Image (tube, rainbow, N blue to C red; front, top):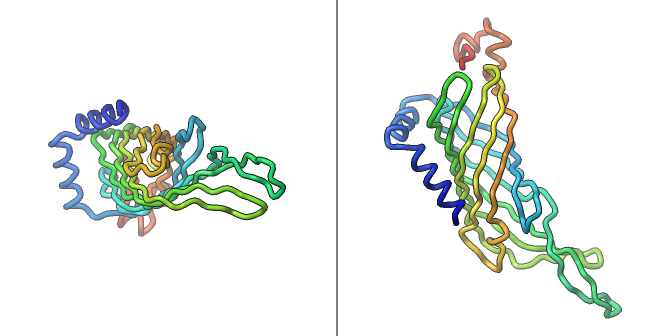
Length: 222
């Protein structure tokens, strides 16, 4: 819970009342653009580093506020050992793999931005299912699926190298608020997501400054 307290205090201190009101005004008075992303986050399950992949689709308001929905799933082998008997009666140790997937609802509030740097507070809530499965004599045996409620606060830093590309890093913590049969305990983890950022609209505006689209929606901006 120390990690939760640290992130909660950090988020509250960085997203003060004035910043929230400024972001909310942007939400009300600007036309949104599409926010579509593929992502990979690295975290730990039973002290094993592995990857959680995801897709996101939402709306971006002047890149100061992003909201949307996505889907995340475990993209790696995480397992415990389970004891079973073979057809001859001899004991076997099988890998019992953890599996999960969940819908996520996210918001990303920018509280500091200049020409090169940007700091934001991404918050994500998810609902989904988790289960275990093992393979026995060519058959997949699955456990009962358990409902999950996921909460993922964090902080994000972004460096803009050019108008159309940059680098980023998200650091957060994943909490499984619904712990059933220790599944939730295995999902609680620090998460890290290094990112290569490419803004294709800004790339187009930079490459074609005289096009009709650039004159209408551009030009590229810092």
